[in-house]
Length: 304
Image 1 (cartoon, rainbow, N blue to C red):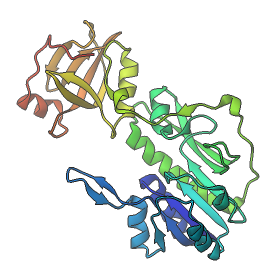
Image 2 (image 1 turned 135 degrees about the vertical axis):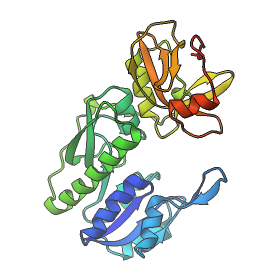
Image 3 (image 1 turned 90 degrees about the vertical axis):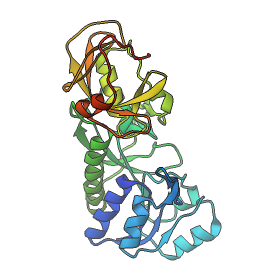
Image 4 (image 1 turned 30 degrees about the vertical axis):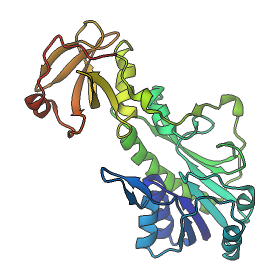
């Protein structure tokens, strides 16, 4: 099948690879312009761009899709369908209507739950026991199009945003191939049950130790790998990458115990053991290595 593909991060690259491995004819790839990344803030190609270059696919990185010349160029390719996954640009109506089979979107939730930019993190934060992927027929709204196929994915107790992302990326790639093969009938979403997955802000990653331990645990997992849940200690940010519930009670934010097994901190209704920590400018470290260079005494208070 002749396909135009639009996507940017690793989530989208997984589905593009699946299309190519299945023998589909990807006639053009669209991805976001290179963005500064890393400590040196050097421009970095997206995961989709890297794959497109490796597979020698026609590639463009427009800053907008509202370009008549670009749309004419894509129309000349006579695609049967366009597939969009975590692209990051709005798809104009002219492009939505261009392929005979329209534009399909791979969305990382069980629509209509968690429409929007951060469905993976929001599902973890909310304590959802499962999420999933939905293949949707795109329309002009924000994740409001009719659904073609969906597949549930269990959220494990130790899943963070990265591990859940990887499960969903693999599931989305498989489900896309099924959709193209089976061509199911679209089913409208029930907008009355819709929830919105707002973009994550750094402020949300600041740990409030007065909250229940289960919520703090979900916060740590939801913001791993980005932006990283953090607390404030000695006037500096201290990132927490991994934790687990623990026994103990004290005033919220109080360090109850700190040894090679972890740093146990009181939350609003119990305690949580910090298992991977990072000082500003440092590396992620297990408790043994972290405490060797940064001693933390019992009774110390992290700021809420």
